[in-house]
Amino acid sequence: MFDSVRNYWIGFNDPLEGRVNFMYLDQKGWVSTGIGNKLDETAQANSAPTEAERERSLAEARELRWLVNGDGQEATADQVAADWDVVKGHLELAPQGHNAFRPLTSLHLDNDEIDRAVFAKLDQMESTLLSGPEFSDFADWPANAQLATLSMCWALGPTLHGFPKFRLAVADHDWNTAADQCHFTPDEGTIQIRNKLDRHHFLLAQVVADQGQPMEQIGMTLSDVFDVQGALLALGFKPGRQDGADGPSTQAGVRAFQTTNGIDPANGQFDDPATLSALSSQLTDAGFNVLSA
Image (cartoon, rainbow, N blue to C red; front, side, top):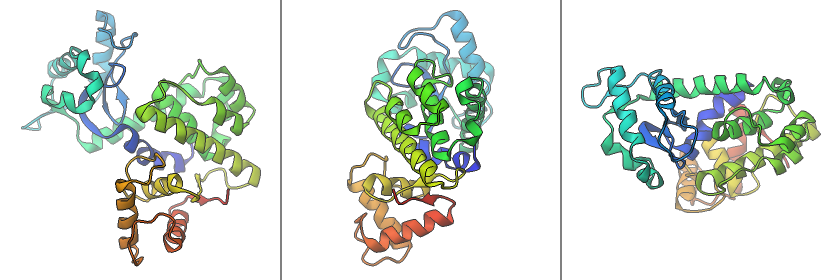
């Protein structure tokens, strides 16, 4: 993958998955942590594991450097297993979100370990993806197409076997068709936002290809609030999730950007010309390609 994709990866995923430093169950009842890092080899969603599945899951969990709450000592293998078992044993709490599991756990990860785990998973995922013939020239794809494909893999796993039309589209570098075929279910919550983001970046990949823009840069546009949310995230501001809604979080993020950049008035209006101009300039300075799509 291009460095631009790797450098943007955490900023892209953090608003979707959140940064959780303890074990919890995701919406499908799989033990997870970090920024959507799955630590669960249970074959069936919302099910108890077999003994073999449990052992494989514990081996994954033990690859991380867990710290004991309170004293910060490195956890033992038995302590990791105990936290995993407690979390997996409360499938009924999965719909309540990760915070329901905080009181049940005794271990945590620090931020450096979360970042290390994220990039280790990303590299492993890309390696598996490249074994498919449709992805053999992945290194030459537009950065936006790389980003969107890896985003799908982050949620679904790196093989994407259930998407034959999508695989054919990317093999042909038909990014518009890839945008139409990248959708997955259940289309709700963060998955709904990820679907929208993936489609958006495949469409931008087509613009990059059609206009002969640099493939190695992530292309962005600034035509609506959805685009501005993405720009703010890319620049380290906090507009909430990139969902296209001009709500209080987005307005606060815009105001923070305006205040930081001396834009008066700092009114939180995303379509303010001075704000859009400053966003465009800073995106360019940060290595992004502002497109005129």
